[in-house]
Image 1: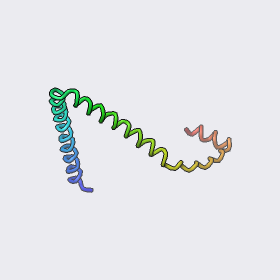
Image 2 (image 1 turned 90 degrees about the horizontal axis):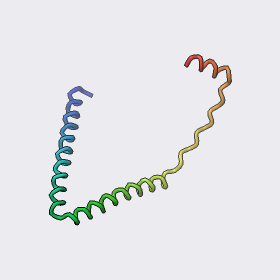
Image 3 (image 1 turned 120 degrees about the vertical axis):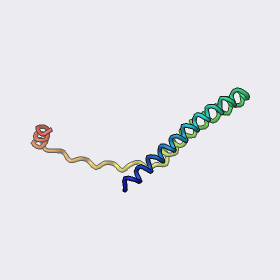
Image 4 (image 1 turned 90 degrees about the vertical axis):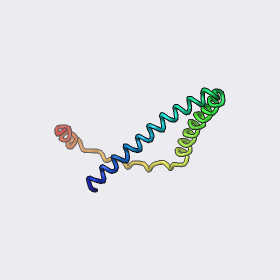
Length: 92
């Protein structure tokens, strides 16, 4: 990988970060204006979307846990003779 291409990725990350930042600020402003004119509707929609997002994430976690096969058991680690344990403790 060339050094010049690393700069390209860094500039790209910065521009994406700037776009996200500006979008967040604009979102706050738009939400405030909507809240001012249509308070109850905006609060109702916001509450619904927040709860739906939370329950959707919980459902996704539950589905993943229910459908993921259990991991294979780890094979037993053989016992280390006492002489090797003492020499390992002295080194560490």
